[in-house]
Image (cartoon, rainbow, N blue to C red; front, side, top):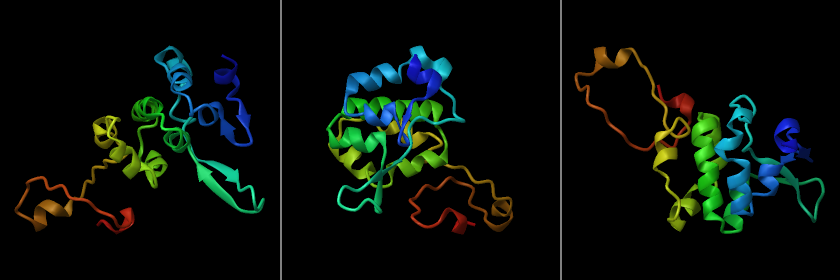
Length: 152
């Protein structure tokens, strides 16, 4: 309860990031019993700035997903993904998966359908000129690796 009431922060890292090496901790911290404390305005899963050991002026960023993946805690990753789909369901959360998505998929033990169908990786565009310019109104899905601002 202390964690959820105060959002205990230690050098920018919350307890989710610190305890993500353990599946049981993730199941407890992110369980539905604490849903009243979850709010999409204040996300719990985010990248934390960590100082490099050799050079205190250089940093790298790591999230709870990265920590769980580093410790091979696939159950913890699944719990975190379920939380993200339910409480952090927006495009900004996709940045948590920039470098680790391929490794999560290659491990194969995590269900990825829910996150791929959520607003994290899916965005609908309403472009009024489409119908007047094209007669083909069928849906077409293909990957796009460019800037989101270049789509139009």
